[in-house]
Image (cartoon, rainbow, N blue to C red; front, side, top):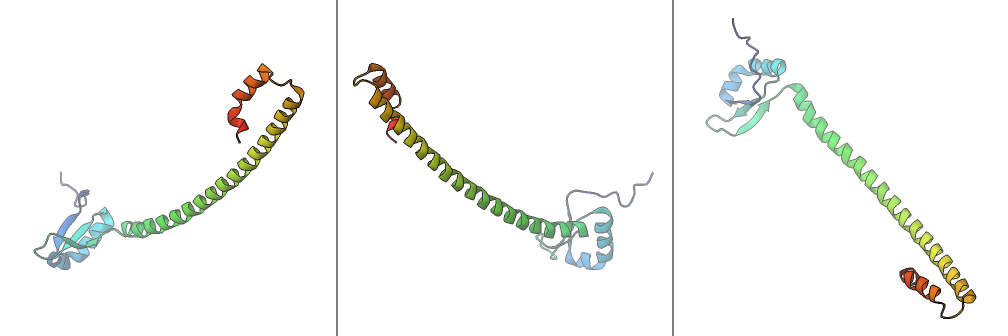
Length: 136
């Protein structure tokens, strides 16, 4: 049984010298279109690629990937700004609530000091337990 002519779907791109590409350009373009084959073009006698013949969808994908990356970067920057704004708002709100709590705690301790006898051991223990809160 014969092997189909279009069965060459090697993942490695083939490399051909420019001279051969000039003579087989139509065939190489058809091969790229039908089988998604990538052909690297090299200078005659040099193995470094100078160009490539790629299927059209692959060429558009590179441009689309760059456009998508730019769009994602812009969206990410917008979200980062929004998150930073929310973080700052939350910090301000937290500081305000902390001040209100500290004021309420100061009022409660002032009332306890007025009502409890001086040197009350329970009040001394409570004040020691909350010493970190009283320093604010």
